[in-house]
Amino acid sequence: MKSSSHKRPAKILGVLGGMGPAAAAEFLRLLALRAPAATDQEHPVTYLLSDPTVPDRSRAILGVGEDPTVVLEERLLTLVRWGAELLAVPCNTAHFFIDRFRDRLPVPLVHIIEETVAAAVAIEPKGAWLLATRGTMESGLYQKYAEKRGYPLFTPSPEDQRTVQESIELVKAGRSDDGGVLLRPLVERLWTVRDIPICAACTELPLAYDASGLPQDRTVSSLSALCDACLAILYP
Image 1 (cartoon, one colour):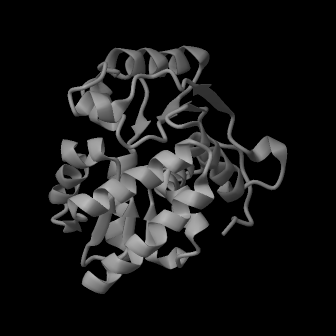
Image 2: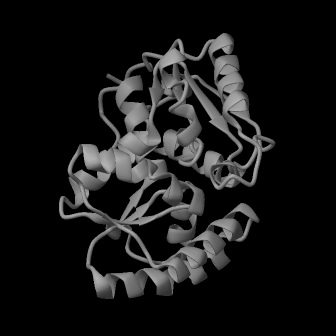
């Protein structure tokens, strides 16, 4: 809900997008929709560097693709040179590599995985189904941050994981509706096993979930979690 007391944002936000482009666009849409702003001037100044040429993060984690660490660090430092005072990257898998240099960044970075786990804990303390790219799943990223909070995450079968990956790839190909059609029966089947929310831990998955017609109160969107965390800092 938008606040009735409007004020200008405290910092300039730098967003490294393009991983994928639809996810970054949805992040910016949420940022505009949820900002406590009544005029153009009350919205955050946001610098977007959209670079879809960043090497595939999942392939790198799986050992079959180029390591994107150097490119990610260079792009984030470019945003800082442009004047960004706060950084956000709407790509979960990228944070496997960002964690290698996060402490060297000269300005704070809002960590999508930390924020998504925190949002999941707030929504359902008993745990959540973790749906993400194969790279994110095999990296143990979410498991690491969830374990810090003693929070249980449940993972789908290898066959269901392949369906999740296909849904993600459909969104990246501009076919969110098809991604939603594929995702819905999988999620409904998971709920028969364990009735807990879906943690959409890839930034394409919230788009597929939205297109699926599944209930919004049964998911934890990593895009929404990142957006809300950024806004909390931008509007202290």
